[in-house]
Image 1 (tube, rainbow, N blue to C red):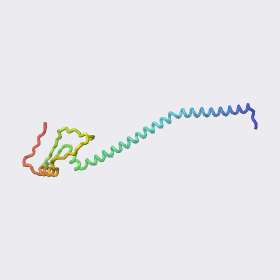
Image 2: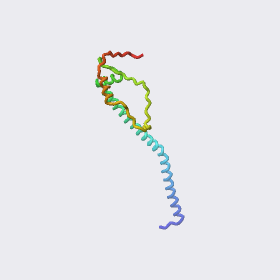
Image 3: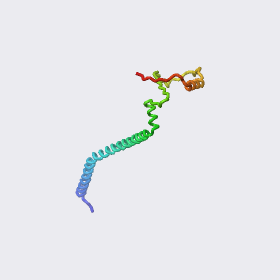
Image 4: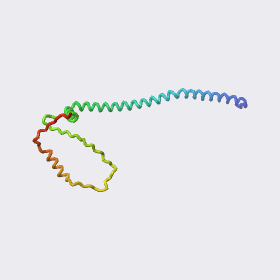
Length: 147
């Protein structure tokens, strides 16, 4: 079947009209779907953030439950009372060391140019310290509250 030039042009115009209409409909659908898709991606991001918060809260809960279980142990309670509140049993001697000297931290970048030696034998110093600590003092130990 042979078409004339005018028939061919009319058929192509009709076909191009259908294509143009389809492109316009697809463009309108795309424009209408942009916002819901953007909202969906934002919700997925919020959902992943909430999942990470839930997992962090579960980890905190597990730590709190383990801490609560420790507090049910009498030995743990005694240890905490002795450490935190400085409680002692009757007859115990408690030593409270207060470091009131402000020690400046040594600079780690500085390197000594020479090797230094001490005149003290550390083994003898250790044994003297042990012997001093092991001797029983005849003086009564009194503790007075500080004001």
